[in-house]
Every structure is written in C-alpha cells, then in structure tokens.
Image (cartoon, rainbow, N blue to C red; front, side, top):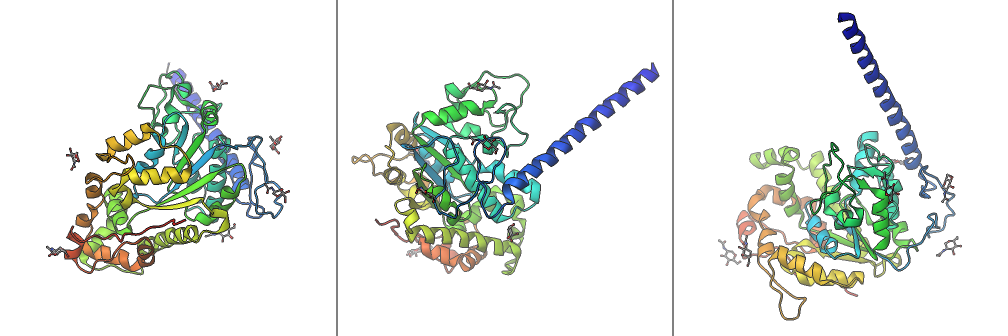
Length: 421
Ligand SMILES: *[C@@H]1O[C@H](CO)[C@@H](O)[C@H](O)[C@H]1NC(C)=O
Ligand SMILES: *[C@@H]1O[C@H](CO)[C@@H](O)[C@H](O)[C@H]1NC(C)=O
Ligand SMILES: *[C@@H]1O[C@H](CO)[C@@H](O)[C@H](O)[C@H]1NC(C)=O
Ligand SMILES: *[C@@H]1O[C@H](CO)[C@@H](O)[C@H](O)[C@H]1NC(C)=O
Ligand SMILES: *[C@@H]1O[C@H](CO)[C@@H](O)[C@H](O)[C@H]1NC(C)=O
Ligand SMILES: *[C@@H]1O[C@H](CO)[C@@H](O)[C@H](O)[C@H]1NC(C)=O
C-alpha cells in the first residue's frame, strides 16, 4: 500500500517536472522568436500576417510597401493617444458608444508592454515603439495574429479568455462575437452585456472587418514621431487625437490611483522637501517632455500629419463634452450618432442646448478640478518647475500660493484654441 503511494507520488512529481520543462522550453523559444521580431532595427520589422515574423527587405522609401494581403480602403481609423489618468477611458467611450459600425479596442498594447517587460525588464524604448506601431497597424487592418504573439498565455486555436479589457469594447461583446459560455474557464475580462465564452479572435477579426470605423485607445505610445509609417500607410485613413491634461492633476490623480507607487512623493510632501534631482522627478519631467514634443510635432503640421492630428484638452471635454465630442467627430469625418450623443448626455449630466451640439454642464467640470484640493502645494510647484514648457504650451496657468491653488474662482485654464485650420 505504502509502496503504491510512493510510486504515485513519484509519478506526479515527474509529471510536474516534465510539464515545467515544457513550459520553460516553450517560453525560451517564444523569447527567441520574439527577439527575432523586436531586435531588428534596420530594416524595421514587418509582419505578413503568418505565424512567423518576417523581416522584409526595406527599400528605404518612406511609404510602407504592402505586406498584408488585403487593403482597407474606405474605412476610417482613429488613434486616441493619451497618458494614464487623463480621462482617456472616458473619451474612448465617445467612440466605443458610436454603435454597430464601430470597432473599438481598449488598450491592446497592454499585452505588448507586459510581454516585453517580462523579456527585458524595462523594455528598450526603441524596440517597444516598433512593436507598438506594428501591432497597431495590424489591428487597424483587423489582423490579430501579431497581437496573439504577445498574449500570455498564448491563445489556443485563436481563442483566449484573457484579452485585456475585452468588456470595454462593445464590438467584442456583440452577438456575433459571443460564443457559448465554457464552464470552468476563468475569464477576468468577461463581457458585462451578455454572457459569453472565451474570445474567438477569428470572430473578432470578422467583426472588425464588417465595421466601417475602427478606433484604438492607448496610453503606451510615447512619441508621435514613432507612428509616422503607420500614419503614412496607404491602406489606412488614420486620424490621431492626442488627449492632454494638466500634469498637476495627473500627478494628484496617480497618487490616489496608484497609491503604493507614489509613497516617495507623499513623504516629500510631508517633509516639504523635494529632491529635484531624484529619478522620480526626472521621470515626470521626461514624460512631460515627450507629451509636449509629440504635441509640438502635431501642431507644427508636417506634411505627413496634415489633417490627421488633433490636440484636445481633457479640461475642455469636461466643460463642454457635447461640443468637444462633436468637434472630434467632425475631425474624424465619422457621423456623430444619436446613440453616442445619448451616452454622453447620460454620463456627463449635460443638458443639450437648442443647437444640438453645444452644451455646458457643471458636474464633470467640478470633478475635473477636484485635484486642486488634494495635491499638496509643494508638489504642484515641483510639477510647474519640471513640466513648465508643457503647461505653457497647453495653457495651464501656474499658481504661486496654496490660496490660489485652492481658490476655485481662479481659473487655471487659459482659453486656447489648437488645431486652427
Ligand atoms: C508570410 O511569410 C511566411 C514566411 O516567410 C510565408 O511562408 C508565407 O507564405 C507568407 N504569407 C503571405 C501571405 O505572404
Ligand atoms: C511606395 O514605394 C514604392 C517603391 O519605391 C513605389 O513603387 C510605390 O509607388 C509607392 N507607393 C505609394 C502608394 O506611394
Ligand atoms: C535600444 O536598442 C537600440 C538597438 O538595439 C540601441 O541602439 C539603443 O541604444 C537601445 N536603447 C536603450 C535605451 O537601451
Ligand atoms: C472561431 O471562429 C471561427 C470562425 O467562425 C471558426 O471557424 C473556428 O472554429 C472558431 N474556433 C474555435 C476554436 O472554436
Ligand atoms: C450632477 O448634476 C445632476 C443633474 O444636474 C445632479 O442630479 C447631480 O446631483 C449632480 N451630481 C453632482 C455630484 O454634483
Ligand atoms: C479668490 O480669488 C478671487 C478672484 O481673484 C478673489 O477675489 C478672492 O478674494 C479669492 N478668495 C480667497 C479666499 O482668497
């Protein structure tokens, strides 16, 4: 009896070890293929949609030669670029809620960043930006095969229960994409509107193909410049909307949302001393500079971005959601449906004024200023110091005292018009 147990235990242990080894072997080979896709700098990597990444001959031309089978003429593509805590999920909804003709994805690059970080610690920015660009391109063309390579655990026969924030995309939860529920499969990001089984990416791709409009929201692209080949790709008709917000508000919001990561900031605030040379402060400065440089590039209207770039301040959206949504829709050339309009009305408590597009409201503009009471004045000063040029560009006024910071009758927003055409 005892012997039998011992043998059983040994067998189980052996099985576990074999399984582990298999995992290790597959992880390693995955990394190898991934290196292949990401380490190449010149020529840049292109993917032809097959399972193996292919590095195509780069002809030095600035236009991206076609490597995908089909084309995508007649469709419109929106890329919503933002930083975290800028209200990008909310603004993304303006497009997600358009209705049955929209294919919206919420932050698909989450998978890419995660896998690259697992492989390289802090991923090399050049490598990530190439991967981001190529994944965005393939997704705009309704091809999920490249994204699949970054989903962990990998999808099985193009089916995965783990697509990040699937439920935030109406198109990924619509009836045609909804497969029967599978028992005993844990789905972290399951649809809320109906009960669905794991996501079949082939069905997702087919749904994407049926839609005239496609939108992707991301907070991971650092530099607009890195998207040039994507914007110039003749198969896409892409419009880039860059969403910005007062960096003091972003810091205040992050300190609440990612409380653990911001302990040092809190202790600085408590001590009243901020080491301006600290890495954390430098990182904030770097982020502000990248956002500013992207905006400067977009606003300078280089040929390749002509009529393809729009800058929007979150504060303006909060003050005039309906008007700003209408502006964005006009810019994209996509009809602003009553469904999208209704969603905005419902979620901003606006009251629509006779013109139908113009409205003001108090709620979300009150909400958008709450940070003024939560950020210690000392930290607001530091942000002003290191993010000054960005704040100046976007029209965020400096404060010189705690009284001004907390005095709601002092507006911190310059009236500013961007994108004059
Ligand atoms: C994509 O590349 C692979 C590997 O080089 C090749 O076998 C396949 O035929 C290519 N597919 C297309 C559609 O070009
Ligand atoms: C892109 O470049 C190729 C090779 O130089 C050229 O033949 C082709 O006409 C260009 N395509 C477009 C759409 O400009
Ligand atoms: C990223 O990789 C490229 C090419 O491999 C290299 O030239 C560059 O220095 C790297 N950047 C960083 C920050 O490591
Ligand atoms: C996913 O959907 C496609 C298209 O309907 C179908 O052919 C395929 O069998 C489905 N995959 C699985 C694993 O059910
Ligand atoms: C927002 O406005 C609505 C309608 O005007 C009101 O019912 C609601 O109480 C307000 N909410 C807040 C938080 O002020
Ligand atoms: C707030 O600002 C207004 C306008 O500048 C000023 O008149 C008022 O005295 C200020 N209130 C406080 C409490 O400082």
